[in-house]
Picture (cartoon, rainbow, N blue to C red):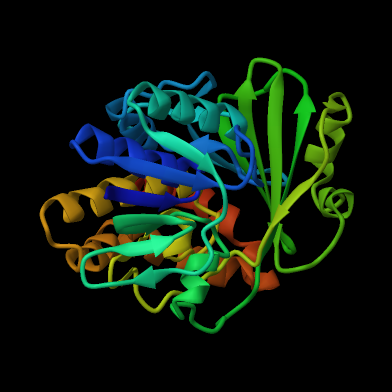
Length: 338
């Protein structure tokens, strides 16, 4: 019998399989899409995520990130990372690097889709395979989570994201967050001649209409060349009843999501993958839900607070001026997210 079956071959799923294999478990990944897997993503990895990748033996090519900068008109606030550097990396490059490491360790990655899940007292069966445990790392709108009845109704504003890349030299080694009353734009250098620009908002508009809200950024991007189409994701907020259901554990975005505003998605996915495998190896799968809540608490509280403010147009325009007036508080918030 397979020790661990993983639904989803994105970063969360591959990291789970790698962690499991490194502890002596047999892991098999089921993924319907061809590798490397792409998705709408800000593509910035916080320093904690970089350290987690290194611990897995994964070192993807990308651009070193020194910190976070908030921009709103004439107002600028920035804070450098205290505990190492982050990494701007194309999602496809990150996925390919994780897939190579998984292959080196003997992880099987099979084409297919996890749909109906049947559980017994000592095994779970799906996609024609039988395993002791199933990890659902199948994304923001996880079909496995939905099939198990673990989704909770939406509450609060619905936010959506769009991302596109521009061929041009990065003008900063900071992730820039441009603010407006209608949302935010995130600029992440991902190579020495490529930047990714993601926009987040509650409004449903075209990508170029979003960019019109950021005239300074739009003017700079006119000097670059659009290299790919727009990818979208949303609604971003996903409320989850529990992260453990019998022999199934939810990892990464499938485990619940607040927003992409603070850029911790990859770091949290890697941390939750490690926590899930640790609980399984200890024979305490039910401890995973509590472990997940603990490791994501700071992120959830800070992100929730920022989203509430950013969704109120009059309050949103005060965020960057406030960060400028209180640089030590802004630096502390950036440090808390590392």
